[in-house]
Structures are given as C-alpha cells and as structure tokens.
Amino acid sequence: MRITKAAKRLGTSPRMLRYRDSLGLLPTVREPPSRRPARPSPAPPGAAAPHRQFGEGDLDAVALALAIERRYDVSPAALAFGLRVLTEPGVRAEVAELGRRIGRIQAPAARALDFEQERALRLLSMPRPAQRLPVRSPGRR
Image (tube, rainbow, N blue to C red; front, top):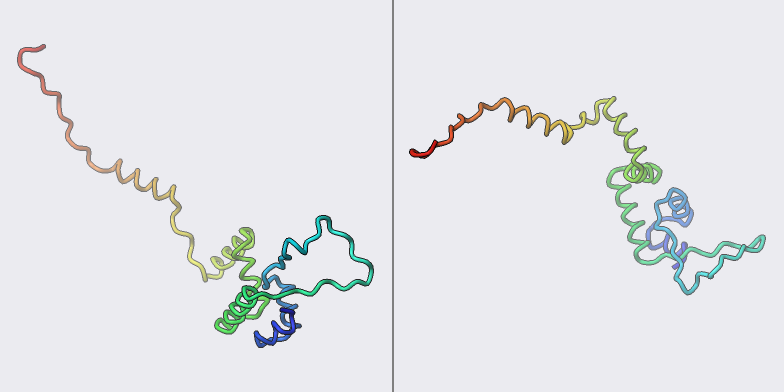
C-alpha cells in the first residue's frame, strides 16, 4: 500500500512516516526481483521517484516503533539513536563511557582473564595434599 494509506492505518501522517524513514526507522525498501532492472538506468531529469509500498511487515515494524516511543516517552530521533547505539560498537563504547563517568553505569565486572587469574591464585594458595611415597614390594630392591 502507498504511504497515505499506511499512515492512515497507523494513525500518523505521511510526513511523519517520511521523517521516520529519513531517521532509518522504517524497514529498507525491497523491490521484487521481477521489477528490478538488470542494469540500473539513470532516471530522466525531473522524473519522480517510485512510490514506496508498505507491506504488513513494514506496518508492524512502524507500529512497534510507535508503541516504544509512547511507552518510554521518547522521540523518533531518540529511538533512532538508541538503534545506532545497539548496532555501532564505537558509539556504544562512547555512550557506555559517558554512563560510567556520570554514575549511571557500573564499572564493568571482572573480565574472564581476571577471573582465571584469581582462580589460579586461589589454587596455588591451597594447602597441598601430603605426598605419598611409592610402596616397594618386599623382595625387590
């Protein structure tokens, strides 16, 4: 379905759907293989872009985004940034560092190597079992 009908079904405006698309909050457009040209041809000057079609899966994804925004009282831009934090390791690391500096995130737990080092030290400090001397059979030297 086209954007006007999709917006009406979602209870929003076509303009808001376009804004969400510019933020990356809409599923990517996939053209059916039969409509995709083998070699892209340049559009003639002044030609309109093809209309985006919304399927049921697209509507479900947008409805989920709208529900998240209402539930957590965040803007579409904030939701888009949240997705960016989840998908870009560099951004995630910087946001986590900020969270630690302002006291909203606890320092990371001991790393696996730290745990292994602590375990090895505990094992080394344990008392050793008494060593048994080898038993010799009587008659052999």
